[in-house]
Image (cartoon, rainbow, N blue to C red; front, side, top):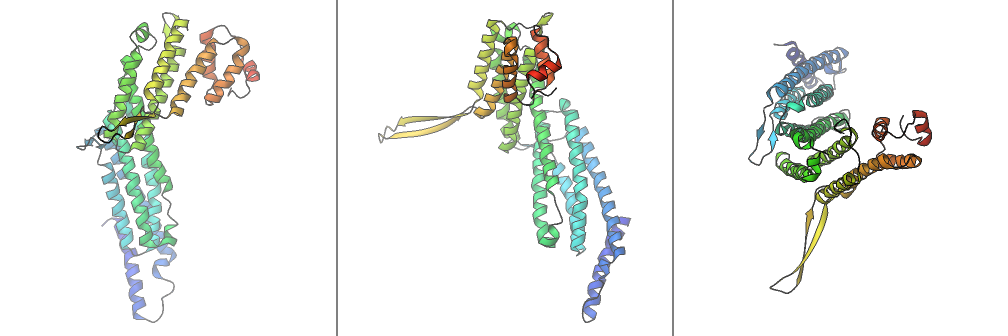
Length: 392
């Protein structure tokens, strides 16, 4: 028998002995055997060993996750792994042992011991996803989103059950909120990497951006069609639309980022692209296409019922993203173009507008704009004086 099992058995025996003594005499035996300080120390050691074992199991799960990349798809297309089942089988096992002790404080201490284990698992998993996503299939990343969502659901169930096991007063000492947030964050990390994986798989198309063929053959259409198809496929692989919505927003933000990066960094021959009137007009067509394709709107149709002669109103949705989300992205690109073209005496005014639309902009972006323009020589002190809100 392991030392952990011996400590648990001793706690259980003390509880049973206490109850037997109370049945054999009048009144309540004080102090209760399982409230002795030595028993608390024993329980502390038990929980520490439990945490160590659980952490080892979690490490093994993470290693299998990273090396195996095994997932399954349901007939409906949902992607998942066995991790939530395996993890919460371990947790339920510990909860069952704690409950069988008959002591509320054992249940509480075990639950409190689970918090750092889950925090370790979530932090390591998020780092693992960020480090490995480039080599993982989209389906496997979708499974990570679903797995962490399932873990949130299972942990929430446990949190509700604990009140019935130990009572509300004891249950107030257990806080799984950080763990729930940790699983949500891991799902979010996987979602961000799903958006990035789209551009990994579309690299050949993205590499054509701002080449002559990009505008001549309107390849922006191909990029947007692929984006929409990608989003539609996600609804089968990730059944919770809330997560798909976040991935769609992240994908759009990446589209805007890549577009701006191309404007600022891609060279034509030995120099940067020149924003000629023709190129500016072509860029404007791209931006208009993005708006027309992606902005979500409700279209109302009215038809006359041939049988009754009455007007019948129907509505349908077109597009994919909120107008505000798309508008902010498009405005940021247009602000960037304005900074690259404005006169020197208007630069600070236009830059202020940029900061209002994109408050996270930093000096690196502005410095790149100045490099591409090549006609403005200005130091950090002058820039700070012209626009104090800029983070220099």
